[in-house]
Image 1: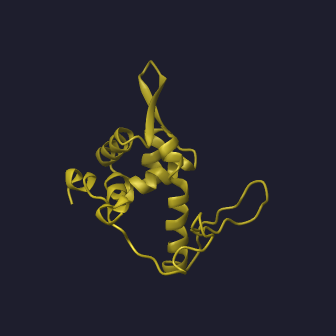
Image 2: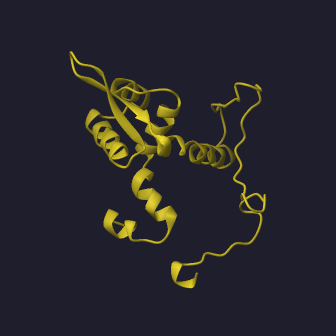
Image 3: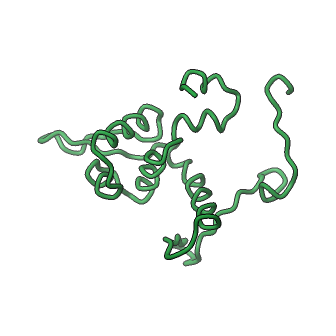
Length: 147
């Protein structure tokens, strides 16, 4: 699916995948949430080729999930900071992680803890209106034409 057709797609999942639908982009966002901001930090953490990292950072910046900020004039150096849209991606990362814990678990896995309470974070998607866990009740998709 190309970007132009996807942007015209009425499905928000399809539209979102054009922005962060590959593993490198998702892992860059994971690392940004962990506090990494600089090109070399991302490269070292991910083991990604510099050209690939440059393309992914540019795409995430263009799509508004990251913003570049100069932190050194001599030599010129920039860092990448999460925007509001990038920060809003954190629950998505946790849901992907929770799915992985259930279906791709085994061995030693990283765990996440709430700093204030010390309790382990276990993500669950809940419908804001009904309070029901998503996936426990029947659903239907309605296209814009049917609204």
